[in-house]
Length: 392
Ligand SMILES: Cc1cc2nc3c(=O)[nH]c(=O)nc-3n(C[C@H](O)[C@H](O)[C@H](O)COP(=O)(O)OP(=O)(O)OC[C@H]3O[C@@H](n4cnc5c(N)ncnc54)[C@H](O)[C@@H]3O)c2cc1C
Image (tube, rainbow, N blue to C red; front, top):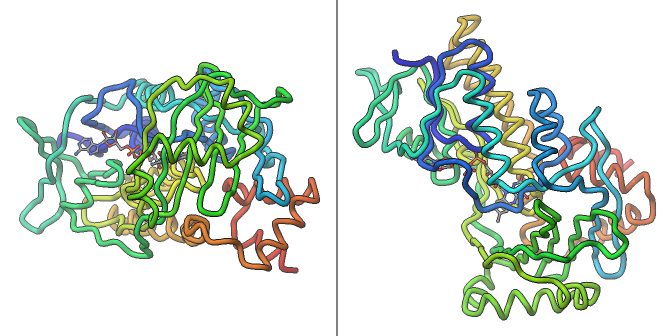
């Protein structure tokens, strides 16, 4: 075998997996058809558990120093009331950041390379290699082949590794929203506190995330049923959504748009079978969801750590490699299953049920409850634990 591990995809899931395995002494190849630095569709919030992972990897300071301001406050405005506060800190990981993917992904790729992984950029994998028993033994692309004891698909939503491995979906729901975003200069919070703002407007949500270079990412979501109408006049519908937030009217008027509007309606919700003989999936390839919780990056970091532990123990023969990655997939599902359910509920953009509306109003009235609420929404507190405690 040329390598112990081949990782396909080098962004939030792939580079940390490659880095962590290389640091443990494995021979790792990571390939990506992209070159870095490069952008990805994302509003790029890294939640506190994501920063805690970066801290464990020795990368938190590099990411925090990449030019995005620490977010001091989150405000979820429901009209009659607003929940305003911040999630709890995890050690030195205290404030979430929205780091542009041009910066974040390049740091991750650099860390994988520095750990000793061989990183090949601009290389497209077209399919898997197999032995006579059907076990995956490597990857192939135009003019190249490479073999390894395990191939990790970290190649995102349309994963070629998943497709060739025949990985089935489960727990799935189709795309429930469409979203469009652009960057603005001069849209800081009026009181000077760096604030991520979320306005719930029924059939629209408007999100403001402060990011690098003094820019604010302004995202508008609509239900998937309205996607075709929205797409018919993106500029007009985007502006109309912003105009529905009175608190924004003067601020938007005084701000300048810095980049074109981008968008997608391709945000399905699913787990994909993520382990098989000689292969595994991590990140969006194995668990994809609507961006409503802004959790894909953080979840990719967490799953990369889980998979790394499994592959490491499997490669060192403490237990079989296949059993180890099967166990990883089960652990991942147990961890993220409740989040997938909550994501689908929120992405339906239905008005909250009466008991949920009452809970949100109670949360808004209490700073302590607000911290706990943002801890749940941003992955620090397990969702079942949170809802069990508020039901008591
Ligand atoms: C509109 C939007 C907003 C979002 N906002 C947030 C947010 O605020 N916070 C958050 O945490 N998450 C957010 N997400 C989700 C987040 O962007 C993803 O969950 C995250 O990028 C997943 O990382 P990944 O490494 O698994 O996959 P990706 O980022 O998709 O990376 C996959 C990589 O694989 C490579 N690749 C694919 N196929 C091949 C191939 N055949 N050969 C070689 N390379 C290949 C690609 O080039 C790519 O670099 C958002 C998503 C969307 C769509």
